[in-house]
Length: 587
Picture 1 (cartoon, helix red, strand yellow):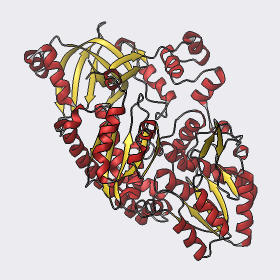
Picture 2 (cartoon, one colour):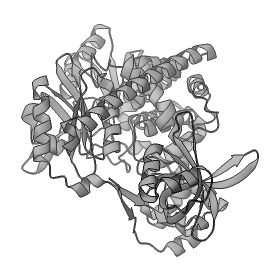
Picture 3 (cartoon, helix red, strand yellow):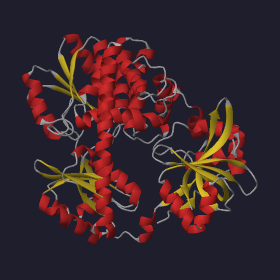
Picture 4 (cartoon, rainbow, N blue to C red):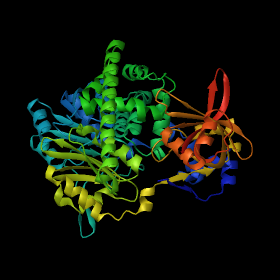
């Protein structure tokens, strides 16, 4: 089913913005599409620097937390950092552990085991800390929902400092929210309702970085020392899929500069192992190459391996850990691909094919891969997808949704089927007895109000831009819009009646289609399509017949006309530069 193509039609004085900031009107339109409005916000979006980051002291309990840590360091008390097993958790622990050691603290760390402990602080870890003589627990990327566990830590006489970025739990009473903040000695989380910090969407590692900024100031270390952790906060911001807006965008933009010159032996070794030259790391590489290596450690083994790589003191040790993480990620990709193929088989060849909400049971799939596979299935079929796996005490799973379907609300309509569930509109986690799997599929599909139009999907085009308008200068200007990521996606353009002059299928897996094309006004350039090439060929065959397709593949003009959603880029080959487009969608 072809997606609906719609043009973002947001209004502004694009000519005025272009003149004021010395940019093309196309760039001005893209910035408006990203909800950046007002001169100050546009200026910061285009030219924001580390000087524009907010004062960390505005965060509630920040000064109290740093005062407590200084006191504990002075007294020689033992501090234990409690992290999480994902990218954000690992980078948060690295920041706090390294910084506390720099301050002379007696600090160690614990990262929960994904399978044995689950997420965040638990009673076993609290009691273990007390038994081992720990005086202070310092959480990062977790803790705000650990009410009972923090109560136990306090009953055992420990000092507790929470640093977190997740939503504060609340109970609703007569339409009023009663927030449940754990009884820690200090709680540093910008999402607290009475926190004056102006930007609420930091990741856990960014909160940890802010804490180190204040701690170093208090101790008298140079400002630049704290900023050495900006690259870790940036890595985690992208890896935790935070919105790249406001302060996050500056954090990532400035952090990427530092990351490309990093002295961290672990990151350098991991980039080398993935054949990414230092100096060329972009947000894309964190999200899709380096980040998954760190995550693979927590998914299939222990996240401590990723942390040991970041802490490595010599190149051989760093290379060994980087190699391990690379291999784990290769295994993770193979296992994911295997699970994805099984899931697609079930969707294509069973009763699931007719379902609007997909509930896919893969008993032998590793439970840590369920969310990734659910996301890939959601992308392919544009339907809400739950992937369930067999676990020790029944069935566990993850869900990924589409915009019109609030996953958490729909699950709440059949909550009696779950032993545990949680999430938000776009994603969810759940546990249930095996005998309820089929019931869940039936109920979710009986209850859904999704229409065929909802399932068709939508491609939002930033600017309908003829190929003739593309210039080298415009492509280079788009660099101002980086880093790209969630809520600051790479812009997409569209043009119609593009004439395919010739085609070649390339790549080991025949998964690249290279075309020479001509626009309505005569601009000729190369177009590349990476994706389901066979589906693209079938689309052309159905529209124009076998003869036209064979002519194009034989480098003869076929007369085929198509519409493309695309992104322009510069291609450099043998010292020569040319403009090409990367095709995202077609019809």
